[in-house]
Image (cartoon, rainbow, N blue to C red; front, side, top):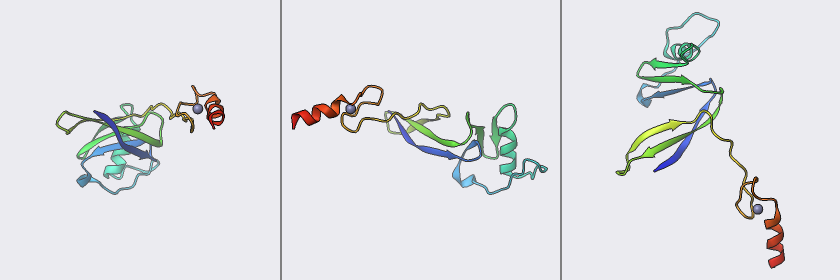
Length: 120
Ligand SMILES: [Zn+2]
């Protein structure tokens, strides 16, 4: 089974995958010299040609299109354990659905609303 477990908010064009007990606080100045801190190191990795790499205790990656809220999907095994997690940096835009018939705007031309009125 797969389901979206949440959305990762991104405000620096990158995502860190790490054990939360290793979460850090640091500063990054793109015009300054490297602070040697973990956040600075992560930024320099995601701005490199590889766009991703290993940092202290985890992995950092840039996102495809910068900032946003990216859906995270978990794949559950038959025993209920999470086997894989996927962050989609290029998700399909959510389509608006018709309030009356539940079809997406692509398929509903608005006739469903007329039908409801005729039945009453
Ligand atoms: Zn409709």
